[in-house]
Image (cartoon, rainbow over all chains, first blue to last red):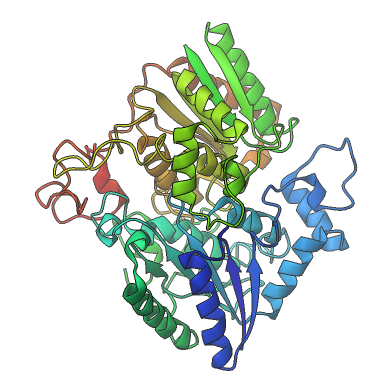
Length: 260
Length: 260
């Protein structure tokens, strides 16, 4: 199978760097083909702007969606963007690996999402009608592919527990897992989170690799997070609120999972 | 009063650009002094790296927290970072204005947070003991100042409602409002969110300005979001889980608000 690892850490000799190398090796030894988008090493341009469309006319008012749509349709996207889209098309599974900085992904990775997720590629896909509000949240260009987050944090696991002060890790990651990965069609696997990274010694590192290795070995068999699909009857269209008889009298991120 | 507007949009002639100009004018007419950090216009460097410490030695393994700590303590931070910290010290209130891109702030603004929020400035502040786990979540360098998000989105309000498919807007913004603003000490006001921006005509724009203007006029009197403080007894230390008798049998972002 083909695996794309989108990786965001500035230091190759860091824990993240070691885990990236481990991941590539583990997957290759299992017979998979791996490509790595090492965003810091690539000097990835983080800020979305008019230059992302090589046909942008100077002086014309810049509209992010329209500019992206025109560039995607006419083949005038910046080459770095088109290359990453090709990698996504090629991949059977995508792993995003990053340190949790201020409760989200590093800016350089956010900028990868913003620029690579073009209009017509990751959003603005499919028809809109009374029963179908675009190919998104379970449908879309990246449907049939799997995605998983590998996240490191210096904080303790209890700080990210259901009653932890930072908020539950699943809620912190919801905008990424649901809003960035499930949205264009990925089946999203449960995240692999590594806590308290400052305290990992050599023995700890072996344990961390062992646990990550098991997740990589089961990349094709792990059950995805059961997010509800948008266009199969659970939601009112076009309000896109969950129908009142589904998870009645409840609110919040959790109601968008089928077993919750 | 002094207001810092941290603003992230690439097009001055956009709705966001117009609202930025409106905000400056409204606040200045009320007698306040305003500084704007217009991140795109400033060509803000989004990616945190070793160059953020001008004393970084080539070849030395880069550790983000340690590098930030050393630079902050020894006055060797990159000049753009030090300038933004000075603006934060100067400000009585900070407004962050941005379009919601993929359910979070634009990469360029995330990179502002990552680089300006130095160790010793926004985190790693204060002592750790059995009753006090650093000056954070309600205490810290920025305590006594107010902060507010002004957010635009193309999506409908119902899509961000308590049962909307994107998740409730307050949960989407929790990692920013609680994790980025409350963490270093800000009193965080309820966000001002402007929906369905693609459908705003001239009349709509006047209404949008009127509503935003009211929020700006009441910047000093609006009650902050009642996030629980870390070090006043609600949390177990060092696990930092909410004590079992507080909001018993409940989980999630909402339990970190006092009235919830």
